[in-house]
Length: 308
Image 1 (cartoon, rainbow, N blue to C red):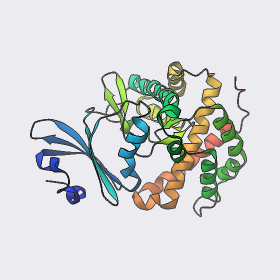
Image 2 (image 1 turned 180 degrees about the horizontal axis):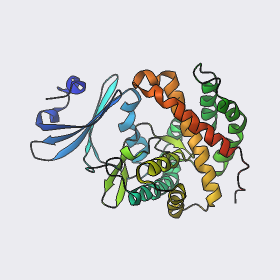
Image 3 (image 1 turned 180 degrees about the vertical axis):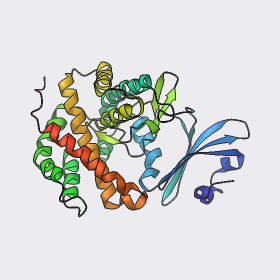
Image 4 (image 1 turned 60 degrees about the vertical axis):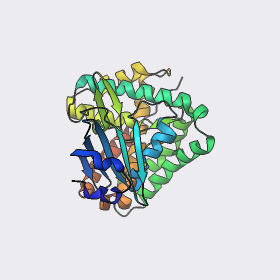
């Protein structure tokens, strides 16, 4: 039986008539993902996205593919006023959340380094300057997000935000001056990392954008520790070993801390300005995220190592 979210697309997607089995992989307010089996026995991934999650196919087309990032093939894409449906290659049975592994978390760190280097190398030659401008989160954008948090009734009194206002401009100036623009996934979590033997393929680029920050590695480090008890130092070393850029471990540590702040500021802004209404129960995430932000702010208050 065709899921309710997809009923509006019945007459627009001929392939739906060929589906013999629906297996729900993920469901939340703005996204539903199914593995569908066709009469031929082949499988596909069918994804419904609402609001900002409806942008995934566009991001594959304008960012992921031109930047030469390995990703599942998109067979079909259908769009309506408030949602979109994408039919994709079934590129893996399990993700890293379902089958956590120390070795694969370390490989995910190395894969992230390769993705960032590849994207940075191809941005200027493969993406029009107008699109680069449209898809980039600038230092000013992150400062504006932080200011919005400071003015939110829910968070205004939190001491970490006052400190953040003092230190963030200088940290972002350094980041954007010294690090190349690259592709940020912004949801580089185990649930979006498909296992392909000994390799990892990131999926779900729906909220990706361009920025030099390394918030993706910050998120991955936290989950590697939670799921597989991989020490932070090992994750940093794995990422560092795959980098093409000359960078000390101290500099990498600083990049991850500042990147974590960028990721948290953007995520918290979305939550406190409407996201908690979209995702039931997400209000409970905010205290832990603010504790994490405070920890990172305290770390980057220390004078960073000199860049070479």
